Structures are given as structure tokens and as C-alpha cells.
Image (cartoon, rainbow, N blue to C red):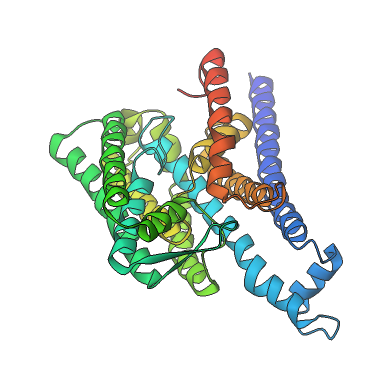
Length: 362
């Protein structure tokens, strides 16, 4: 008996070490993806020139144009990819757990569409103008009105879902169906605004909805990080509660977890960080859906590893997608389009594989 217990302990230790190694590997891959993406985007500069400008900004070997390109244009893109990837990856993992539904994510729950409706409303209120035909860039007369409106409506959409659950006492799966209905309503609202207003507003709305890592400035990224980092810290602090919830609400309650409060706080925090990301960067679909599923195939359902792994893979997906959109074609494609192109087929593959293996997606 003692020998069997020792073997079980050794097996558990080996499995834990492999999971830790997998998370560390994803973290190193995220850093490597950031450096490679930055170097590819800056085709006129060598890898070592990029490193020198990053770590020795005041070096006499750096030209003013190099410093501007790295620090004012491309480093904010990389930081946007990392922060947004962390936020969307962790919210997907948390929502899939608290909702006990494999398709739970900010996108499928309608939070992203609610934010898009708010941004569209802000655009038509303040006006927008399309600049250029190949770079899909827009100039909004007051971007903070658009961002604030996107955030407000994302929170309204979340509030409606939570209120429906509180009033009707439905289960977590029904919350996903409520999210689908909310998403449809806000999508209809966006279509109505596109139909009613002029061509300039229509173009601005359409271009804004294409998720892009080039929209946020350093100050906006700092604000996003201030919101995202404490939420991630809370999720990691509650990692054992999420593990208990994976075994079922009754089991979690028997272990002392306040399931209703955990679900409510997790949903609100997920909505807040999603609203901030979407309001600054537009809609970026499938990252919060795919990242956790792929990491779950590697490390399982243990949220001690699933949460950081989903964050790292979310950042990798966004950085690689942005690199492809910026460099693979003669024209620029926003990262939201790339993630949708790649995410749809890959998610179908994971779905089919999961049902065949019975357990990955259930």
C-alpha cells in the first residue's frame, strides 16, 4: 500500500512538473512571438537594431525615425497584443468554468457586440471620417466618447444577462442562451445605425468593428493594464474555487465555495476587462474561446495552470495573427479578421475532436 501511494505521489509530481514546464514554454513562446512580430513589422531594421532601440533608447547609434517607429508605433501594438491576449484568454477560461459551458466567452455571450453597439452609437453621435483606402484607419472626432460609450453598453449588456439570471433563477447554461439573444439584439442595433446614418458614419462603424492592435496609445494601454491586472490576480487567487466548481456546484458548496457569489463576481470582472479591451481595440473574436480549449488539451482542467496558460496562448494567438495581417499580404488586414478566419475552422476541429474523445469539451 505504501509503495502504491509513493508511486501515485511521484506520478502526481511528474505531471505537475510537466504542466509547469508547459506554462513556462508558453510564456517563453509569447516573448519570442513579441520579438519576432516586432522584427517582422519593422522590416527596415535588423533584430539587433530593434533590441538596441528597446533597451538603449538614448544610444547615439539610434536614429530619430527608428526610435519613433519602435516606441510610438510598433511597441504599442505589441503591448496591445499582450494585454488583450491576457485579458481575452483568461476571461474565456473563467467563463467556461463558471458557466460550465464549453462555448462560454465574451464574444459568444454578446459582450463584444454590446460594446460594438456602444461604439457605433458614439461614432454617429460625434461623427467619423475614413482616412486611406488600404490601411483601414479611421479618425474619430472624439475617440473618448466612442470608448466610453462602448464600455457603458458592454456593462449594460452584462447587467441585462445577470439580471435575467437573478430574476428567473435559471442555470448557467441558460445564461449562455441569454447571451446569444442579447448579442442578436445588439447586432440588430448596429445594423440599424449602419442603415440610417450617412456613408462616413457607416464606414467608421465598419472599420471600428475590425479589431486592431494599432488603436490604443500608451496612456490607454496603461488604463487597460490597471483594470486587467487586478482582475487576473483575483482569478488566480480563486483558482482552487474554480477547480472545485469544475466538479459541480454541489461539490463546490460542500467544500465551502460560495458558488453564486463566485459566478457573479467572475462574470462582472470578465465583463469589465472585456469591455475595456473591446472599447479600445474593437472586436477580436475567438481568442477567448480557442485559447482555453487548446491549453486544456495540454494541462487539463487544473486552473493553477489553465489560467496562466490561457493568458500566454491568447497573447501568442494575437501577436501571430497581427504579424500575419501586417506582413503576409500586399495590404493590411486587421487582427480581428485574421482571428476569425483562423479561429472558426480550428474551433470546429477542436469540437469534433473533443466529442470523439468524450470529455474535452464537456
